[in-house]
Amino acid sequence: MHRPPHLRRRSFLKLGIGSAIVLAVAGGTIALMKPGLIDGKLSPSARLVLTRVAQAMLLGTLPADAGGQQRALDALLQRTDAFLVGLPTHVLAELDQLLGLLASAPGRRWLVGLSTSWEDATAAETYGALKSMLASGTDLRIQACQGLHDLVMVPYFSGEESWAVLGYPGPTPV
Image (cartoon, rainbow, N blue to C red; front, side):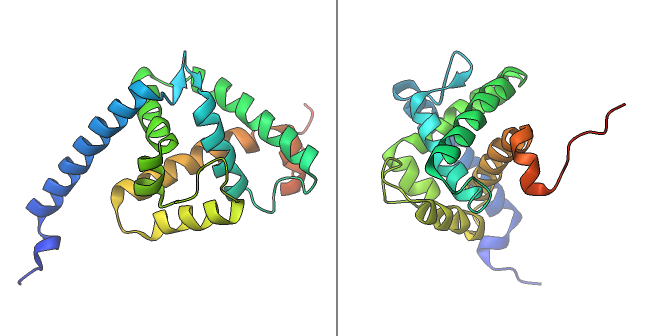
């Protein structure tokens, strides 16, 4: 059976290796200039990226009022920093590269597909860009989006204040 060139195993492996090299070089270079993590915690630029991503991913889940939304996002960022403490060094290095790359204009445009700056991006624009990442068919973009999803959802839904949205009353007293 004849397969188109883009589906051959060798081409697929070359693409995977090439993508990994590009991410490592680009992410490493950008992380040196604008790190995603500082002392194992989110850098200011990574906090902005994660805030915008969280606003998009949690659309309809976050409190409607601006003050309540800000408190929920601040709590999410605090729990994210606490979550990072328990991660292995190699995972932290990958997150540092990813968040550093996403915080840069080329990374935001190339990886996320968002032309608007993180400072000016709306939740709807960010949501559309994240949705396009998942639909792109590019493993690197899909994996980056899935990683961002986990980085937002785990800390957010580990907070008691988010349980009411799910209808979860909390753990049963023992």
